[in-house]
Length: 176
Length: 178
Image (cartoon, rainbow over all chains, first blue to last red; front, side, top):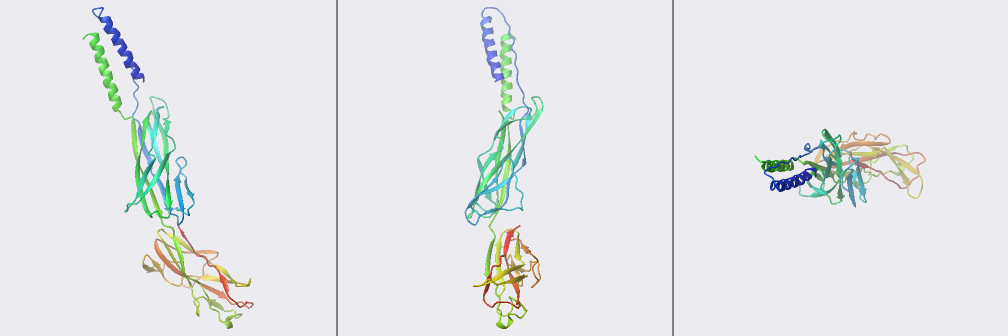
């Protein structure tokens, strides 16, 4: 916005200069400009989203959730599914870098799909972020950083095909 | 160069700077992988119940009777699953006289048959044939995936004050994913 104001100001100065030049042989005008140059924003994924090992229910249905803030894995629903312990679950975690003090926004898709390896069966995964916006640490002129994380939830039923499932999704950050 | 031209050039240069700023990295994206491993629930099926045959002359004899003796049979259990699992059997359980309150304690003994494992016959359980299970609940072995079947035997001692009759009880075998 500061740059836009400058352009408008310069345009007004130009108009005045043209007007003045029509009356005098020569004239000069001085304009000043300012711009804020920000460091490029960067995003590093530290850990992937892992639901770990699950045992599907024999009856009913359940939902497995990885909490975006705590990383805790929970099981809800009326089915008798269980959480196995032979794989470590984790939320996805990210580090943002850029201009200190700058505000940024986080864009996470509402869902993505995981597909069974060696098959075509899919599992829909709903995603949630620990934050949709934030501010980098420090102040302008210095390097800033921030962290956030993404969790998700997936459904399990007695008809869920056993196997290893995987899928990808993109997370984007941008200066406001 | 006239001031007018200089100003115009300045503005063009500034516009170019703005355009360059627009191309600068204002967003950054990271691709994330989601994973999970889903297993079918472990299934357990009793294919044969444990039973003893006690002849009348054995009552009050003080003898120890095995389920594999005479016309008795061991319990046969079949497990299926797709993860490593542990199997546990209680060291003993009680049977109660039908129509009465008298009890007899049945001590379980180790598997006496080989184990079917992924289609191959292997002895993967930890006890030798006929060995007693430890108190109070013994984890008798693990299996990786596929089908595992084994038998559980029992022993009872014919006490002096034993009341004749039919006795029944429940032997609980537990299979659990590790």
